[in-house]
Image (cartoon, rainbow, N blue to C red; front, side):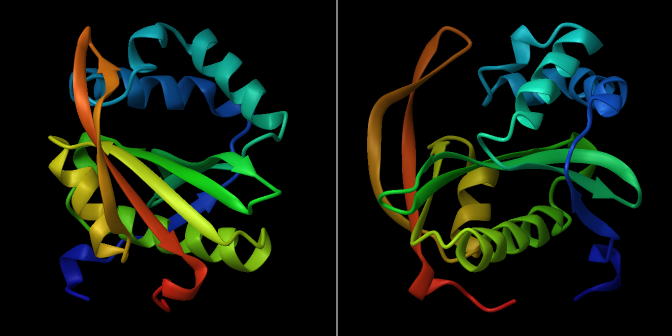
Amino acid sequence: MIAELQHAVALRAPATADADELFARVDACRKTLRAWLPWVDATRSPDDSRAFLESVSAGKSPAWLIEVDGRIGGMIDIHGICKVNRIGHIGYWLADGHVGRGIMQQALSRVQAIAFDELGLHRLAIIAARENRRSCAAAERQGFKLEGVLREHLLLDGRRWDACHYGLLASERRAG
């Protein structure tokens, strides 16, 4: 790995005490994040972040803060888990200053290990707006296969967007 791409990247379970820092990160990147994430406009204060973190603590969907050099740089989760079929969906975001540095690749690799090795999932999916090139590229770099385009699947900022549906089976996972 190139020296400029080496960062101390860690995943950790979020706590309600992280609400102020999490909100500050979202607020600082609001314009970028709202283009692709429908929840950004509903996050208007640290109290909104606190309520979100409380719901995450309820444990239905595993979620982690992505810490970069000891500070919150984004989040990643596995949601929509179906235990019967052993499938789940990954969602993620990074703050503007951390994009394009290999950080999401490290986070995705760790979450795949958790999903397949610890949770026993068979399949993971990522859905990203087709025009969100960085998110699509992150999925593809991790070996996710484009399985189709869902026409007008996402409603973002009052506009319908086509979404790329990516999938990865446990047997296709890259070691790393």
